Image 1 (cartoon, rainbow, N blue to C red):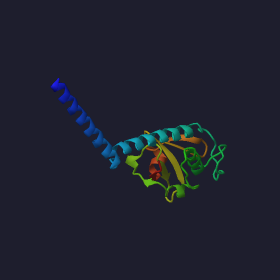
Image 2: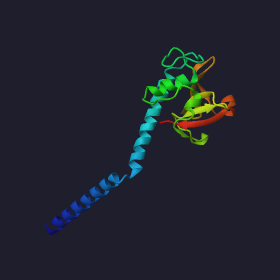
Image 3: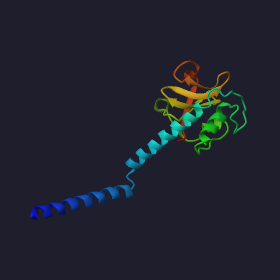
Image 4: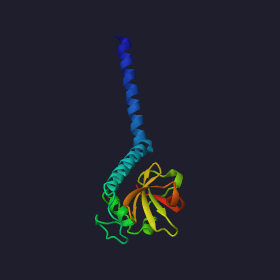
Length: 163
């Protein structure tokens, strides 16, 4: 009986110590759990943004398309519209959009990042992963292109993370 009583006190002490330790870590801003949580939220939001953009596949391209319409898009009205559905306000032009968020190097791209082309910047796309871009231009309208080949690869300029 003495052994059980002593073991029970030891167990309670260890449990209380762990509770205090874990609680203090959270209170003191131990960011690892918070960082993992916000990363998950960003991937989830990126997936939602990409899914919304993909539902607009084939919508015609029109330079200077009015903000807010879903009948036609230009590259920046497309990104502005899609991100706005998830509470992210982007400026109207691709050049203005290239100044928001934080810089991302090409080898660190993640789904949901904005990718910019030309110098000076005249085009924006959404990186969707696996070297693919979701954007709109010319004949295909809203489409998916390969970032790592041809014109898109040679005219890549920069990328920004807004999530």
